Image (cartoon, rainbow, N blue to C red):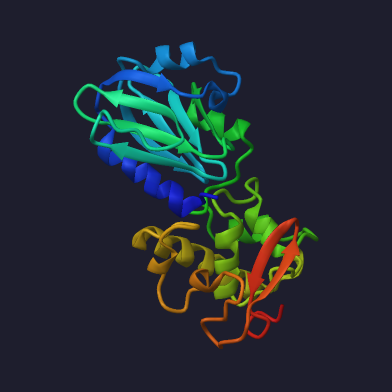
Length: 267
């Protein structure tokens, strides 16, 4: 599933290749991706207009429309955003396509149709309606804010990290990497973590996500771009801890599969 690093890369695709270009045509190949929004209303809002700014919040990507409102993109399990220079070529599983008057098109692809494309009048109202917590990169989400969000609950720390109402952007895969780097058991109750453990966790969250973005690593693609000592390349059946060499423990927690090192994380 695309997580914050993936969506940040999609944001850069949009910002580099789409901003300021006139949208000559809008093609909706499967209107189910629009939810309750009609294809006609969607096309009418975008056709002839321009996208003028890009914004990411958690796993959501938003682009402001020059005549008002926002295009909203959520990538679900298998979604992606691609710029295709050749107008006649279309990637597999393209659900929505924006053709530009100048060149090429922007394609929203989604194999499993778990995701959505839509419109919003205001970005802040959209974020509030989606009940999203602060973005993991939000400069206001400092250690004090992080500590307040994590403390007081009985849920395991992995589930709390993945809760988009607590902090937006982290999913199953990067929560494992963050907890590994912080040397914490994914099943540990978040509300029982010490001040020093929370400090390590907050630092690991920022460091892991910034490193992934800087290196162009995603949640499932390009994980080999992560630095030596990262868990992600070993996050598989038969994987070993990149730190101590111990076989990784694989177990279910909160309905999701977790990977951790029993020696380094005491899990």
